[in-house]
Image 1 (spheres, rainbow, N blue to C red):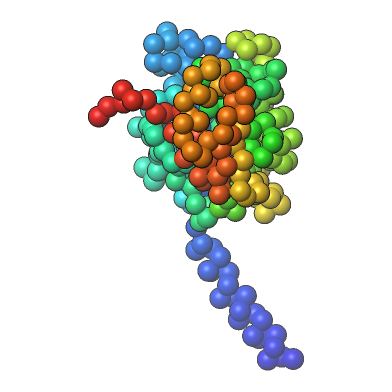
Image 2 (cartoon, rainbow, N blue to C red; image 1 turned 60 degrees about the vertical axis):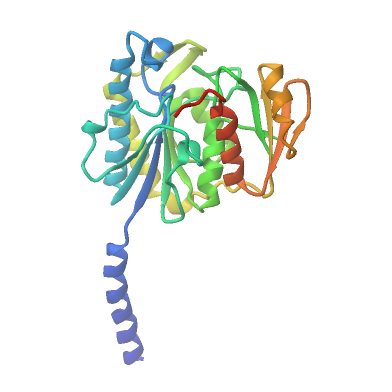
Amino acid sequence: MRRLCLLVFAFAALRAPLEAQRPLKVYISVDMEGIAGIVTADQLTPTGFEYQRAREFMTGEALAAIAGARDAGATQIVVSDSHGNGENLLIDKFPADITIIRSWPRPLMMMQGIDSTFDAAIFIGYHASTTNPAGVRAHTISSAHLASVELNGTAMPESGINAAIAGYFGVPVVAISGDNAAVSEAQTLIGNMEGAVVKQAISFHAAATMTPEAAQLLVRQKVKAGVQRRSSLRAYVMRAPVRLDVVFKNYTPAEMLTYLPYVQRTSSHGIRFEGRDILQVSRFLEFINTYNPDMTP
């Protein structure tokens, strides 16, 4: 018995340093519509008069998420600039050891760079879906072109699509920030991750918002809590094959995409595509959102 106890203690002594050395990897996807203070295109596009300030707000919440993840022990962090042109975050403000994903196109869209080595995923500045009647700047992937996006018959916000991509690799979403509609929608669909509600939606272009400083403090707290309880949260896994249904706001995209033999037209504005997994669906979504015959170079 004494020898057995010594062996147990020896094993524990060996295991502890190994666990301490294992990296804790966190993936942070950052959008802009759900950032505190953001309400209209005045903040969201480079031509808007307040865009430069909005970039600072977005960068501040991303940095707060990094700080929260590190408070919980994160050792490696990848940040995805997931809004608009993908060149919004002020990358010179980030710590030297952070990897940042920028610009488009990307096969995994807002989740490019994630894989099975990550322990947790975090969504910062997210918004509600295009089928949600509430939420500031609510849309899914493209506010200009898409009226509905469904996976396996369920209407999806971007948080749902991105959680499914993370789930393919076994990575749980542990925290999300945005307005009340975005956070509630994600928690109902994906699971009970931590939610930082940084503003209350009043309408599509109005909100009662926290100040950037207050929002950043809340984001840091919620991200820390989410990473700490990552083992209790389950990855959001989409059953394969994955059926994608898209409804466009115009007729022609639906008509032309059915020239592809693997695309079915389901209505005047709707198409269906079946992918072998969520990764194939992600590539198809990136294609229909990005492709233009005038693309250069």
